[in-house]
Image (tube, rainbow, N blue to C red; front, side, top):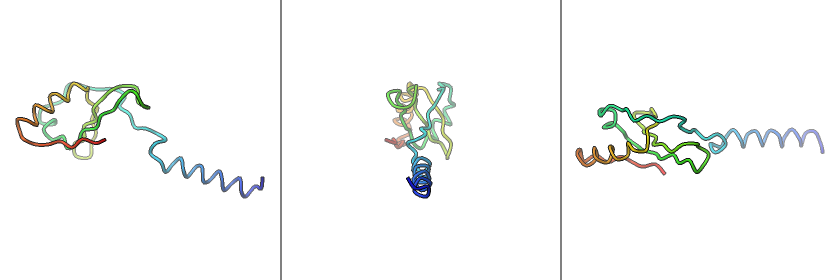
Length: 94
């Protein structure tokens, strides 16, 4: 194969790998159950992480003002109770 074609193919492969988010998943490695109530009230979005995919553990990813926190899945119940009390909705990310 021509050297120029090989370099072009190599460049295109590298570009495809670096431009896709699917190549390197961002997973929670540890979870916590200890979150202050004030922080839980400020949760804007909740994302579920399952252990059936690329990640090793089940977790809830809580999005609060451009920060992400890894919570134990049992926190979901507490979030639902807080939603009912305050009437505030939290977006779920699919």
